[in-house]
Amino acid sequence: MMQAEIPPPLRAWREAPRCRALNAHALRADGRYVLCWLQQALRADDNPAIDAAILLGNALGLPVLVYHGLREDYPFASDRFHRFILGASRDLAAGCRARGVACVQHVDRAERRERGLVYRLAEVAAAVVLEDQPAFVAQWQAQRLASKSGAAVIAVNAACLVPPAALDRGVGTTAAFRRRHAAARDAWQDWSDESALSGPYDGPLPFVPDRLETARDTDLDALIASLDIDHALSPSMMLPGSRAEVCIRLRRLTDEVLPDYAEARGDPARPEGASTLSPYLHFGVVGPREVMAAIRESAVPAEQQEKFADELLTWREWFHYKARTLAVPESYARVPDWARAQLERHAADPRPEHESLWALVHGETRDETWNACQKQYLVDGWMHNNLRMYWAKRILAMTPDPRTAWATACYLNDRLSLDGRDPSTYGNLAWAFGDAAPGYRDLPIYGLVQTRTDKAMRKRPGGTEWIRAAAARERPTLAVPGAPPSAPYLDETVPI
Image 1: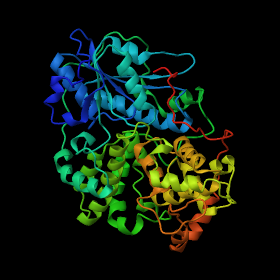
Image 2 (image 1 turned 45 degrees about the horizontal axis):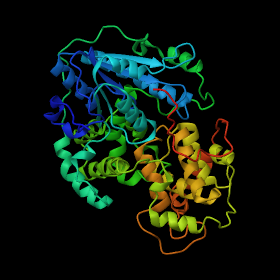
Image 3 (image 1 turned 60 degrees about the horizontal axis):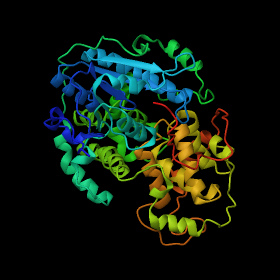
Image 4 (image 1 turned 90 degrees about the horizontal axis):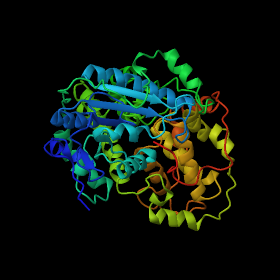
């Protein structure tokens, strides 16, 4: 079998470590375009996937066609996710036009079914460039396309500042990763968008595309209302999906968040302490290079810059690095062996704080602090980082056994949060279930896995009042299954 290598035009690219060939097919000399299939990197600028496609197109004398599709039947499809994604996709199309690149979209619905559309677009492509995403459905969809299509398929990392392939293999600890990653950052911070030498593709297509670039907000709302998705989970008013919101948050980051970051970052009662960028990073509306550029160009003291960079780059990119060593990053099997052994040893322990899945979904448990955490997910589609560890650890005591606890945490995270289904959030859950090292007390339910209390949150000025108000927020009522999904979301029957 031929060794899969990236095409020569990409081997000489300074960002070549971002790229890997998913099959051994050669570039097609008679292709109509280079297809760039985006699922999460929904931005036109500072997008290595688009840049790689342009490099290939320029080498072959072909235009680039950017394609983004959104199905009705992806796991947990809802108004919340559709509205965020389609708002970002609308801006993606406008940004591509400004770069001289064609962008077409398809929104799956009853009257506009397009089965196997990616395969049909790939049939006449010189190559397919897509994102290298290690978690949720994007991972297996990319692998499936590469195995069944006759086109060369190249995956490009668009999520990290430093591509994982540029770092040593086998980094085993966060401290070692921090050292190696920090030493590599400067080399990856600067970028310049590639310029397309051919005009936008305007040839035939195997479908009638949706032109989201010209859609008004009311058009998107009407389209979403017509779809067979979960309409009970409404869009987040706190987190609109758009490039304009990214720009607002970057200005707020440098003007309000970072100057007081050390003091406010751990206090959920102080909204100025959080950047709220994680949903925009998850869906690629912004990349870490742009965030870091905004920070470096600000007047914020270096100490505050470095603390935020540690959260954005060390921890986020460590979890991306780790995810690429795991076949299924969202699996319970990723919890450290020692922690799973401890949790399983206590699996039969009485659980007097057990709650129903309905109470957990709706934040209506007997734990007021946990409810305050869950209401952020349920209402806003996001949770303050300092709350997530308490929220995740408490689920172990509120569910029948550790495997159900993991499935429940993933279900709540993935169904409700705009930054769920991500290597970072799965990594955080694994950390909550296993920490870095065992504790010193063998406790019921947890064994040597460390627990977390809400004492520190309640001792903060205004903490108890904030918890009480947050737990009492009005919330929607959702349909809830009898049990959370117990297996990762790998459905080979869903067409792409």
